[in-house]
Image (cartoon, rainbow, N blue to C red; front, top):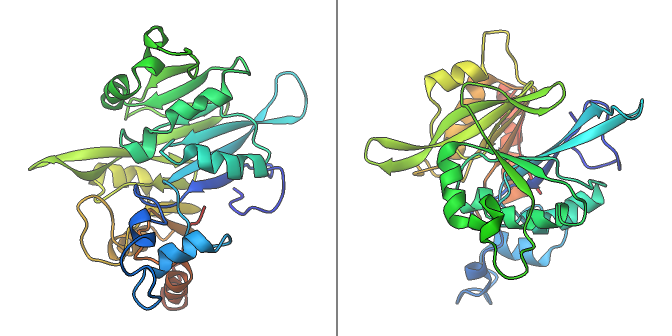
Length: 312
């Protein structure tokens, strides 16, 4: 599957676009740009300043999200059509859509799949209105029952349009429940396998769970602090099961975080799977793109691990 941004249309096997690659707070951070140290080049946050002032910066990071553009045979023609599947729709969805979807000639969002109910994964759902109001389309949103209950509180007018006030111009969506034990049909001949992982704690001894997904030989784990054995068995089904692409959470080089893999944990996880390519996502402003990519390249030289940082 194509992950580079070179041509205007996807290859026959589809394309994956990183709509966002950063943490919930996004990069650059307002607090870094306006801090007391912001006028001192030696003390200010170099990553956030690069992200803000350098328009080509790979340190600019929106909320983690990917778009899968999947080839699908059109029933009306003999040429290939494409199904566009958005995984997560966070606070920065509209900003990312204006930049990347237009650039890559993506005109529709056909399905949305949510990993969990946090704001960086779901708070952009209101902006789906522009993909439905003038097209007559309805977008299915796949999510778990727990997350649907959150959407009922946050976006009551999306779940029940009769409650809409004001203009009443709201996105036309349907809500489809995910069964953790069943694949999600995202397009004819294409499925996502849900992968339940831990993403922090609800209370002592009670984990807050989040979904990752497996699409063929691609695994996406955007928010993870630990992976249950039962889930690992779905990721690596046998010794011959080698992933093409692993996309995995890695917030920074610190050893511990309450809800995200550190670089150390993400590298150890990559060692267990040994995919052909690994992309880290969710990096904080403690991570400079070029510096860390250079460090990660050393793992290929010493261990054959092909790891890099994703970028929007």
